[in-house]
Amino acid sequence: MRFVSFEEVAARLKGKRIAVVGSGPGSLDNEPGFVDSHDIVVRANNYKTGDNQGFRTDVHYSFYGTSIRKTREELAGDGVTLCMCKCPNSKPIESEWHERMGKQVGIDFQYIYRNRAPFWFCDTFIPDDAHFLRSFELLDRHIPTTGFSAILDVLACEPANVYLTGFDFFTSGIHNVDEKWKAGNPEDPICHRPDLEAAWLRANRAGLTFDKRLQQIMEANDER
Image (cartoon, rainbow, N blue to C red; front, side):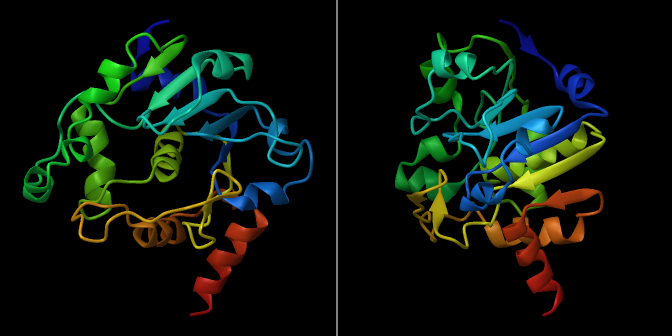
């Protein structure tokens, strides 16, 4: 394996038809074979494959924390040739609340790379602080969800087009296709803000196509 730059990642994705598959139940609404018909399929975290959400996985995008159950053997077996990490191998954020509450893992991501030292098996991209902080600042200094971070990074690679499926910004209360999602601590000053992510997507959807559920979410907000 080797660690690659974002420029190398972009060269692989530029001009491609890309499906980004999130963890929501909307991924089950696809016609069999449709997701896999794209040039590149990107899946996040503890993805689940199947007839409707597809089987191909070319790129695995994750924050790679302790809740990520995918093994290197499973990912390799699914066809993954590129791992993309959401978090840098550093402490890019200062947060007095996290320091006071003893929640260093929310701002210092170096533990991920200590734990994952023997894990990497293919080309792997790890962002630097500047790359990570762009999405953090975009969301008014909130940590992006892994799925939203994947969308931003894929779009930055200038693909031909992008299809999004399995994204509902947790309005379904489900993730990992069929598992109950638990919201984070609302007192956390940098916690995920799916509402801000949805607002950004509504304002920047030109050239994107969506699964049925996400399209309905976009259209419902248009009517408000």
